[in-house]
Length: 231
Figure 1 (cartoon, rainbow, N blue to C red):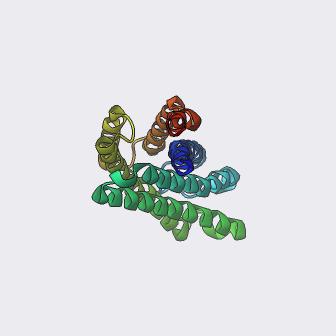
Figure 2 (cartoon, helix red, strand yellow):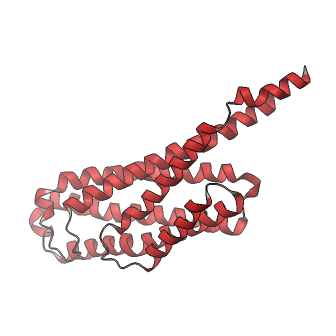
């Protein structure tokens, strides 16, 4: 009896943990994107004048990225735990792989921009307008706006497909995920604010899971009929 109550409690806590992790990821990543967008010009060929005036703001934005990544890993893990035996191996592999690739490229882009700030602090005269700055900035821009964003789209497709098969969350959120994923997969790198689509969708899922979890009966209420029957 005690084992059943423990399992029930764990299943009720897992969705709430996924919701909290997803909300943290979305808020942190969107905050980082907004700070970067306001501080760094969108033109990847810009010479680097922002290093003189906005380096501190960019550093703050970059420091949020690792915490967003940790929350996203937690979000993925708890979602997989909620799927349990219903998890489809093919889509689960795509789901996990695309999520990890997205994080790897997000971290790579952040690390390259952070490296530029460190290099500028060490020797400002050699970085601004240099070939090294132009190359690193262009690579970070391409990795994030082309490759990482495509992996985010693949993650959304895999997650939405798993949701439709296992009822992980509402069907309308899954269909919305397909629509957003197509937007990310076929979008131009110059579409303003396109990077915010992915964390906004994760935020929507997280809020739905959290509300759905709060509507479920508490573990004591769920276990009481069984307890009475044994007595």
